Image (tube, rainbow, N blue to C red):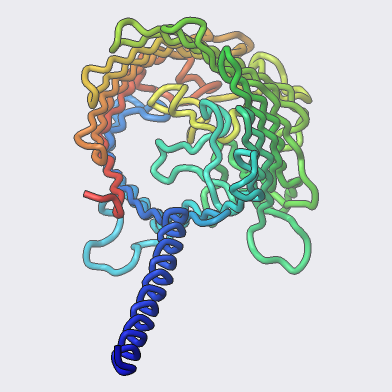
Length: 477
């Protein structure tokens, strides 16, 4: 073989090896990139929820002769999330408005009060352990976020409201071998201050509070522990929320009383347990008990309780039925004001889920100081995989005595409510829901001690139709 031939073969082999080397490197890089993309995940979802409501006594009684209200609200959400090695981030932008609140030919909201655009969620979660750890999860989650536990009776996302509920908080999260331990805290301020930490929880620039008490907390701290046992789930919650102290000052002619915020807080403690168990294959029991102590938002001594139990019996494959009862303590209306408050406040939960679709209790409208007894019977029927019907019957009663304003006592029964709901999943993305509610209220419900409505229509009604579309923009066809 000639030298020229040998040289040519050698050069050709070198080029071939070089190409093989480049291919190996490129393949290794693609593999690494593929592994990275597999570990990192980007999500981009949305929600469009339109709800037409007919209100003829929703929330509180109307007077005889009042006309029903009819309107459409809309929730629009765009949510983006990203998860990578030892971290997650999530942001949800939300707009809530009533159809027609803005002129159709204007490029801004008609009034500032109509501006429904806000940041519903924006948080980051960082893992404190690597992927080789034997601990299932140990992380810290910080930012604006929904906080929901158990059946959402005291802490929930309140999804029925178009704006929902969220908190600006930090939560340390632990999960391992069936145990869940969360420790969270929040600290609110109205703006960037140079001195002091006074917080105005009833700032007129925005709606005051999210739990119907008229004042938003200045701060909170909580601990939540849950464990899955062979007999079911059991959890414990301690939640302390703090309200800015204040005093009232009266001056001028005519006399005007104003509220002046002070340094310091009044603290409210809520402690309780929740359980969820299946004694048999067809019977489910859930229940809870919570006690509130220390002081309410106005600095008054607090001693209140809530107890609840719900049973659900499955009959066949499609029918679920069951009774239940809720007790939330209240004050004795026939006695003069005392130094102790006995009204239980169900914190930042989801009242629409438990105390009637007409939202007469623990929602936007007050109902006196007497607390609540809620006897209910619920029926669920799954007609098809994508079609379900619900029928809830509630009997509402005062948990304590009601005053008639003349030294006597009113009947404690407040009314009976019937809620009928139908849910149909057109697709996995599109859901249609419709509901109708009617109540037979008593004169006690209309009395000054409860709803305080003169010449009240004692047969209020409420109906709605809701379209809910939740697309996943990155889903493969």
